[in-house]
Length: 340
Image 1: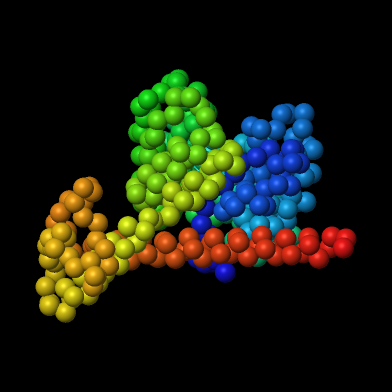
Image 2 (image 1 turned 90 degrees about the vertical axis):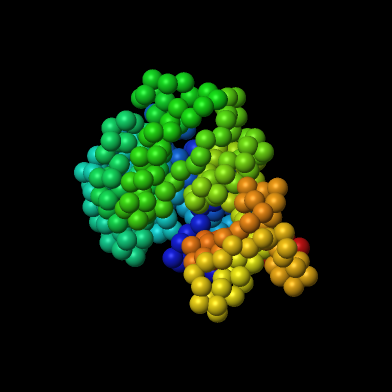
């Protein structure tokens, strides 16, 4: 089973809940989470109908091991929460978060609904998404407004570009300041930052697998662990991009081996010429022609970083196994129920 301490969200799909073929096929996409959308992808005249679909859709998107998430409307908070908070829902995403009291109101409503609907208290998380300058300015107040806010990010995208009066698709990072502020607020509050480094996208494509991989790989190397998208083509590349490479795993194993050797000497650090490492008797370190260069410093900081990387790899493998087993159970059930 996947860790209960850290639910991985390397890849997720946001899809309109009013489109049955999207929801019904979501379970075998391989996502870590499915974000059922009540907001931008649902036109105003279908909002009521969309709300009526959430409860029955949660077990559908859960079938393949993905976590069920729901994005609500900023101006329809109470009605949307009343429709969305049911057993099996992991998180509610709240767009255009700007003030602490909004999150506190959400927390109070969710707490009441959990009690009324037999959900373990504190189960449903709040994803407070920053999409305006006001939200950036109030980031720390927002992220600390409720313990349900366990990840925090935004400060990019269409709404942010409109609020700032900047173009969306440009070859430079027009959102760099706001993203940095939100990330620092998340880290200062001890929350998981939901952010990504800049990768050029001047076409607006949401289905480019190469770009999805590059973005996820860059995000992981910057210390980010959450992805997401709008097209099934980006799911596998994102999950692959968030996974450490074989070279990185081998390097981390080598660092820990050398650190154990260092501890036995009583020294606190050592510099090693990695080009002289015996490849027959040691895990493979990353060497020349990489950004690390020829010489490597081994100390407790490098050891801690190596341990974190190997722990992350273990969590990724655990989560992938959980989803594979869930899909196998669904297919086995379907096969047993089908006519001979």
